[in-house]
Amino acid sequence: MSTSTFEHTFCVSAGHPSLPGHFPGAPLVPGVVLLDHVAQALRVWRGERLARIVEAKFVAPLLPDQAARIVLSDVQGRVRFEVHRDDQLLARGSVVGAA
Image (cartoon, rainbow, N blue to C red; front, side, top):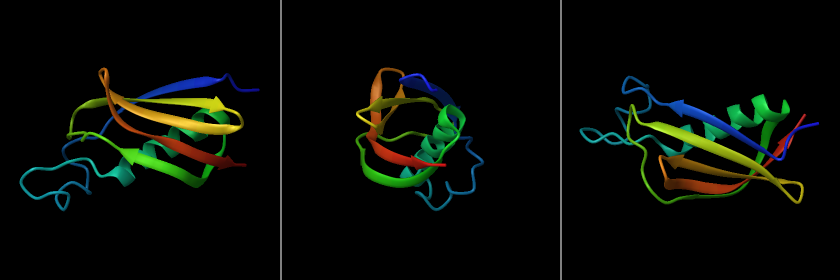
C-alpha cells in the first residue's frame, strides 16, 4: 500500500538531447520532459506506468541545470502532480497510472 504523497527531485542537465531544439540560444526544459519525470516518479511511488494524462498546465519554465521537485498525491483515486522549482509552481495536473 502506498502513502498518500510522494516527492521526487530531479535536474535536467544542459546536455539533454531535447534542449538544442527547445529553444536554440535560450533553452527551456520541454513540458514532455517534465511529464516523463512525473511518469518516472509514479513508477517509483506505486510501481505503475503512466497510462493517461488527464490534465497538465505549465505555468513557468524550468531551465537546464535547475533542480526541480515533483509532488504526487492521491486525491480521490486520481494522482495529482505539481512540479516546483524552490517555492515556484512550474506545472500541475493529474494522471492515471496502470499496472
